[in-house]
Length: 485
Image 1 (cartoon, helix red, strand yellow):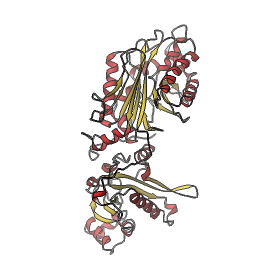
Image 2 (cartoon, helix red, strand yellow):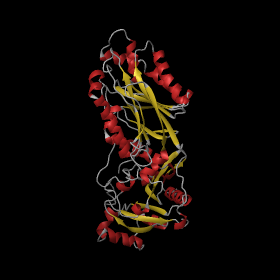
Image 3 (cartoon, one colour):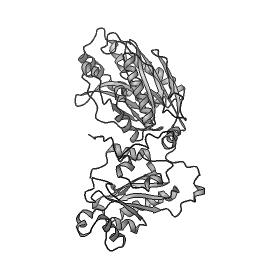
Image 4 (tube, helix red, strand yellow):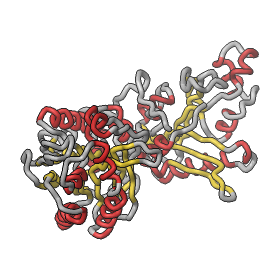
């Protein structure tokens, strides 16, 4: 069977960090256990692994769930005999007790079924023989010895598991310390403590001629300073806002010359943004900047500079036809949620927001806020990004923050005119703004918009809203698979 991708592991941790364990021995990782919370009404019915785990991301995690779901336990074969599996099961039971859930549910493998089945009439008979202790199964016998009871047999649980012929045993451990029904209205607080509200600021940035790199940095610093004075946690700048640097040239440059001219500013720009993030104590979503990569590709990169001093890069996955034509920009290969002091976030650069698979991939990894730096020349182009940004907010029950350029740069290719109405978008449900718009700007003027976003409102909507798009996905019919490079 395949391994978990980094994005899947990131999703498991971001969705429910307390439920993920590793066993370490002499400096090596030798065991791994993944768990999340789920409603018993779903977990106690037959299901498939892909359905209940959200394709391996633990995206079905329900903060109000009354059962732990064990999606994985594995041990390095070279270290078996150290009772690592037993230790992981003990840690999982300890977690269940500390959180007062009713029990633990999971689908257990039958790794000897394929070669032993010829001696039995059916998988059901094999299961009955193991339950009666007339047949030993290396996994199920261990689980029964650990106090798990058999609820039944689930066919097609994990089709990749050829040794088990796709079957799994539906297993349940009941927490003996679970509270009575009348105690279950207690308030619960799950996960790492995040701020009650996150203040975001979007800069609608005016493109105008500058005389030097320092002048450009001073303009950016002005907005960072202003938004920091308003105690914003994040400030986002538009896509390709650094093309303003090309206005310093006395004559119009060819596309190839433009890219070469911009490349020399990549490191100074990154360093300036990183320094400002720390100095002004604000997380900066640094628009985007055409960057020549070590393999000589040109990619459109957003530099995310956190106030902790960390710097992340997110490439645009889908360059537009204009970007390909003018600058030979190529699409990036990775799309990762970024952990911040306000929870996981994601970045979709302009055109990327028009591909629903990308937003879903970020939210599967735990992202609560998606930042969309954009650069559009006229209203129709802008509305494509705006409408798709609103769709991403609705279908993923997340916040979307858009930031665009206004003004013009007459001597810069592909930046002749700009149209923008930057905005902060929400899902459409009772806890949020009436029209799904927390804030927006007047079109085509330089300004800043702010909004306070409540992360708890997202959790409430995802688990008990009028509609529950994430929870109601049909994982039995469709899924998004990201091919890690």
